[in-house]
Image (tube, rainbow, N blue to C red; front, side, top):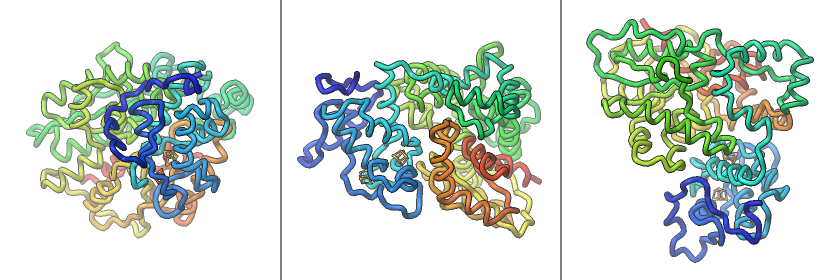
Length: 450
Ligand code: SF4
Ligand code: SF4
């Protein structure tokens, strides 16, 4: 087993960005094993800031458990022991601590030394898979984008599972999926099967490339349409980046990365980069709707050792809200939104990865473009869905408890409010816990077009 006392740890991800971390610092306490990965772990200065419960995201598992070993720093302490050969990878306390990390990236932004536990968890899982075959559920959840492309009938199976206690019970026993939570159902026709290139602006102010992620494509094609419409109305020619006709849909590989299946993620990342690169070369900004997917391309690909093309793509990639905010500040948006008439403030729930890159500022700026709009950004930690975490049988209750830390009380306090949530899993959690529908910002903006 990897991380064993007698065995050197060879990192699977590219941690070279941490090469100089802790250099010359006698107190850095860098573990003996693990090279640059060990340096990434050792950037923690043990301040225990992650064991506080102020505003912000960090650290959802500590917030609901009060257990220091389930904080970011607690995980670091256990990992250091493992990298020093004092614990095995399979140690129960370490395995539980890593299992309950949601990879929300709250620590990446809020810890004073920017410990990136979300990436560290991917390395940890990849090391585990190197010696122990991943579970059926892990393989299933990681491959959802591929499965949806290959087996369109999966849609009917998901619908049946959501309506039949017998089928959801079987799913729970076989795959460990919580039977009481409905799964998101794919749309009848994904965006890449009906999209056309109509209604392009005659004299565009610029050209942009819209990254078609699996979740928007398969589950919310209307969001892609809405984003395209807003961007076109704002004066841009929009290229939707999708696979060639007859090829499998593009996928950024985020679901595989989240489950530690690094080689599978790399294969998808290479396809995605190859599809995006011509647009970057044509000077187009790459725009993403789903925070986890766009930010995988922009930030996580750097750990996959994919070379300069990946860097170039990352350098041109922006979230939808970041692009609209940037263009409005530069005075290039050619659209005036209609006034919003409701007195009830719209509630905004940020995806943790949006918060981790400071994109809530852009959300605020964009919403201010709508005259008369009243809105409130909910102060909440992770919603607890975090990809597939909240539907996993053993995690569903703790995921729900995280949602109760801030998100759900805020929603209940304003039952008539519209809700904006750009994250697919956040919208899923809001629907599952409160039976309310949240919209992507692009949809909300499209409703405010003249
Ligand atoms: S993870 Fe960050 S906040 Fe927590 S103890 Fe380490 S340095 Fe402090
Ligand atoms: S990624 Fe999120 S859950 Fe994991 S240690 Fe950091 S703040 Fe905690």
